[in-house]
Length: 92
Image (cartoon, rainbow, N blue to C red; front, side, top):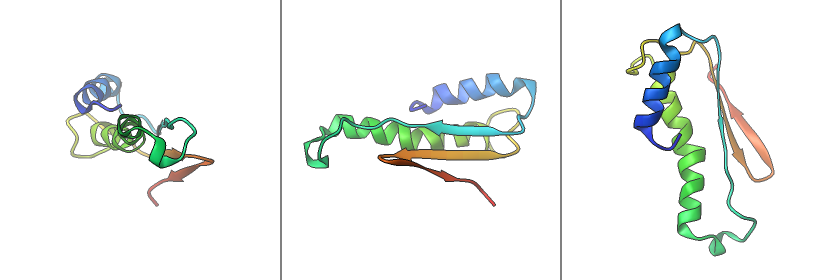
């Protein structure tokens, strides 16, 4: 999910069969349980890469009407995890 070119290749392959009715875009990782100031920068970067950039990469490649994919999902549910729960955002 963190490498846009790989996600685009995956989406193009998956979408060859047509548009899915629903794409559930859910990826999450968390850092080790520690105060933020004790979490190494590399570990925090991995959290951001997966939880934020990964969701955006999947949306760009498979849900955007302007994507390079042959077609796009009809409905997308994005879920982003955070410590203590899950937040879900969906277009109206």
